[in-house]
Picture 1 (cartoon, rainbow, N blue to C red):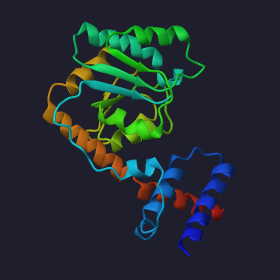
Picture 2: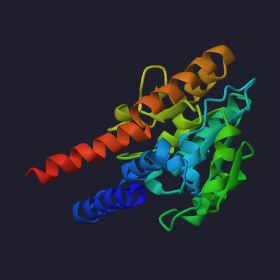
Picture 3: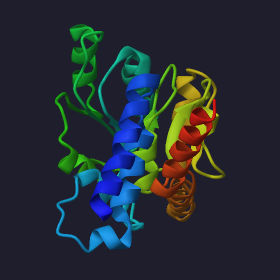
Picture 4: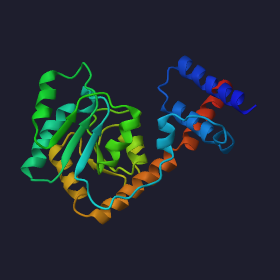
Length: 244
């Protein structure tokens, strides 16, 4: 019986998730992998939207869209206080791009800060929860993802960026190196707005070079964060834990 076996594996993953207290992006990935197996695809199943995203092919853009995306919940640890200074720096340099901030602000973000972001002429603020079925539209309508985080552990946003062929533009914070491959990111010294703006200008200097970065980001994400790799890492962990 195929489905019961998959359900057993899924319940095992849920058990370890609850007992060990992990936040498992890998849990979704392992489930995606199980459902994506050929013998399961023959069944009449409605797949969650994140499974479809995981299987999206690479799409090269014909030209720059002149948008940079900050996606996900807006919180202080994600460096939302850097949005206004960066927007002002780009405007001062007359960089032809807009910053799209899409996600719901959390309670730790003051309204005054959100008002400041909304007033920037080169920032588009969508302060609301973004349904999963709209996620791909935001990524495909932008050129790259801005990661302004002050700290980072796991990041589904970076993985989603790579899946959509987005290079990332980020600060050199602790832990970020785990998410960066060869030619997948433009990294500025920690919280250096001027250098961040330099990197954005570099991104827009050559569409050909940008496409190389875009492809590298997609391939790196596919190699490191694919469902197969995530599922393997989860099963390896479970195997090691059960031996203790």
